Image 1: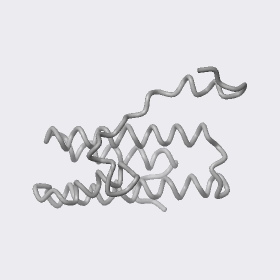
Image 2 (image 1 turned 180 degrees about the horizontal axis):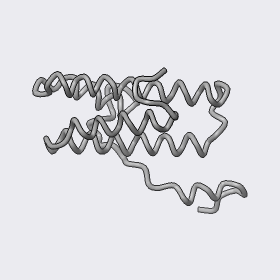
Image 3 (image 1 turned 60 degrees about the vertical axis):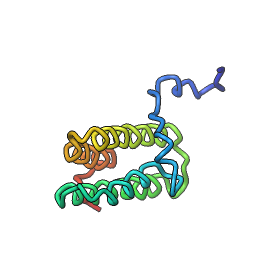
Image 4 (image 1 turned 90 degrees about the vertical axis):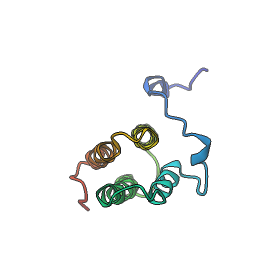
Length: 126
């Protein structure tokens, strides 16, 4: 597909993870739907639930930061695409760890760190 002049940067973006169908509801946000499913999993311990809460918070903080950083308008499409891919990659890692029952706490910790780093902060800083 030919891109308009100035849009060649799209060719350099990695493929975004396509969430499974089970994460299409109840909202339009697969990350929120994954969090809902995780919160509903009675097998998760309290420590993992704390990390899950931090992940939910960091996803929201990243969105607030980006919207504020761009003056409330989504004008920097390249940066928006990069952040969406970052978030999707961590959703994928968290989902895989949850479904394989291996490494969920570490996947959540890494997601929290990466999302905070994307906005230039330490986790939980606002």
